[in-house]
Image (tube, rainbow, N blue to C red; front, side, top):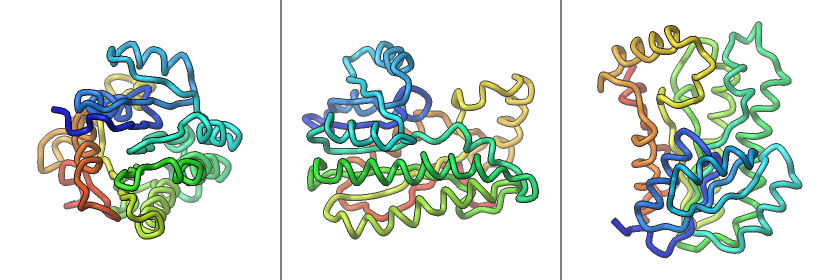
Length: 243
């Protein structure tokens, strides 16, 4: 499959999980890929796992200087995907009465403000037939206990993306909203608790399983290659929004 042959794909957060799966899928589709993230060591390890010569770029979405440097380092690209989020985001999952607003600000700083700064830096370098894909989450449109903070971040991303789909046209702007996906983001949980969480969610979903990074990568490939999709939020959640 060479549907991305000759294209440059930049995946922010490409050193692990969904981002790494997207990078692999883009490489398989013939693209030239740059994976970006805040840790050079993690980027180097991911590039080795990808095994096909993916370029790496150190980028900290919480640092305006790092974002400006990324703009200088990437003179041209076709598709930008921003999967990264603040480590503080998971820590905001709690009721309003217990919400740490400093952590919530950190989540906004990376996942929303950092992403928008990066898009502003790279907008002039994007091909006119290219695309931008943001990442949100189901809490933006589904009531999930303890998710008031994260819901606000994700809803803001989706609203910004719809605006940018018009402002940056003909560049296409979309959002992927993943459900529960089996990634290293949950490795800090005790194994029994983690597996119980996955099993319980699988039973509740119409598809009968939780997501895998490959599921998200397939959706990302679709949004990169379908030139008639813009301003959309693509739910990849196993039917989770059905309740």
